[in-house]
Length: 420
Image 1 (cartoon, rainbow, N blue to C red):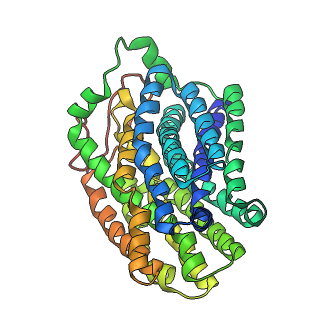
Image 2 (cartoon, rainbow, N blue to C red; image 1 turned 135 degrees about the vertical axis):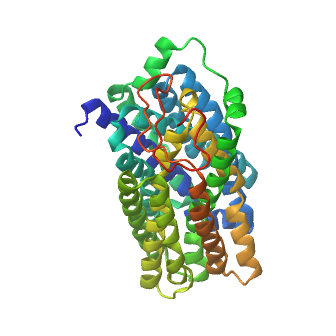
């Protein structure tokens, strides 16, 4: 199916927005050890910054999502990108751990808004048959950002230190210039603005769709434990437990993020053929046989192979999520609902880094054991949970009122109200 120039610009902007948002977040995971040394604390104290960032993301999803539902996806996306970029820059000037924790909390609010707004803009703008592959590409922005952070860490960390890495985080603000020049507003939102008299409140929608919301929050909690449980502490695992050099850690991180990008795109595309739920379940279960190599191997090459395969699994499952959540979402709050349930899942999983660091510390800094415990558990949980949701592949998004909903035969028990 042929895309217009404007549709390509929307897709590129949304992908880059999530890439650069993730880049700014993952700069932190590479410098936990440095920050702990700078402020004279344990690594477990610094991981609280990751917890706070993740915990505040639902607030950002709610604030920016509601603004986007009211004022449009495009201007809110631009404001969001500028804000998280400036907060990352400010993190480089923190004079105490407390100040850094405050700044990373504010960064979490800004970060929390980008995914929901960007994914709604994309899914509402592209042809329906392209949602699967675009979902994978969009979600591949997350490991792309991690990959970019890995490269910056390997090339510049020893020269500019942890403060300099945060200061580089202001560069994503330049993306706003591209969006302002090339990206149009969502046609679905424009149609809704012209035809809808009053937009419903998010409270009324959540009250009406409480079963769907609860299910999606639980599902996204498992998903966030899956991703953060396999990513956030992995550089620390390599640095502390295996005592690898900066450059070795960077090379391994680059390797597993390439696997993540491949997994996201491949399973996103596959979901267009076999359905969203089947693609997610298959991807999640791949993690189980990979666990021993990923967490308990010795030597940089076996660990790199294990990490590469693990992230094919993790981000393969995640690659389906942008399309799946947007298709399941009530159309009148599409910029708010998917991002909000996603980030509430993040909130419930936000203690992951601290939990894993604590378990590892209690077992002689055995980060591999702590990570394997989390990853193996949630892989099974996701494969079971996904079967209870609806399959809404191909749902129409071309009208402000959501048009008709046409989930496929065999949809799960939580198909949205009004579906048939």
